[in-house]
Length: 240
Picture 1 (cartoon, rainbow, N blue to C red):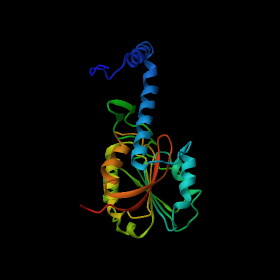
Picture 2 (picture 1 turned 90 degrees about the horizontal axis):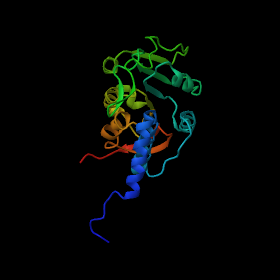
Picture 3 (picture 1 turned 90 degrees about the vertical axis):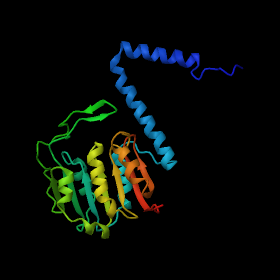
Picture 4 (picture 1 turned 45 degrees about the vertical axis):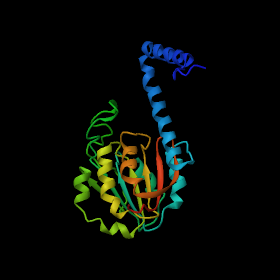
């Protein structure tokens, strides 16, 4: 066999050519195929980081699975509230009166476009609640309205270290996710649970996970969906 055997076989090139022609004729098909590629990359990333993970068909089933792992006297930090679906879902299932819930959002939608490597997923202002906080009648809830960098800085959060934490990241975008995670890193501890609604997105939430979290903490994957991820912090990674 020749040492100059091509890496890209003729059969593979033929398949690629057929696919390229199909996409040229039917451009609308390109986005679903790109999404398949994103999800495939996410599945590979999970295998590399966590070996085997329990996969759930949708996020509510994942939420039900992680609910028993949450302690009492819980503090919940929800980053990205929108219309309050997740907030309402959880509050109905967490009867602990000592729970405190902090919801962070501008309530006016995405502050920038949500894009992945130049592909716009959602435009500026998407997911807007027109500035209105959710109509949830629960005294355990406190809304923090505005830019997360400012609303986090407006409060002393040092008490978080003494309570179990459940943190929900659903800002979709890298920058506000990184801001929130950086602010909470000093208070993270073993047993805290973190949920990422768009962990499949390597340019945004997953980038923050890789850059800010996994090098600092050993984690256990509690489960995932095709796009979301739940992690439990185990212990800090010793500093070199």
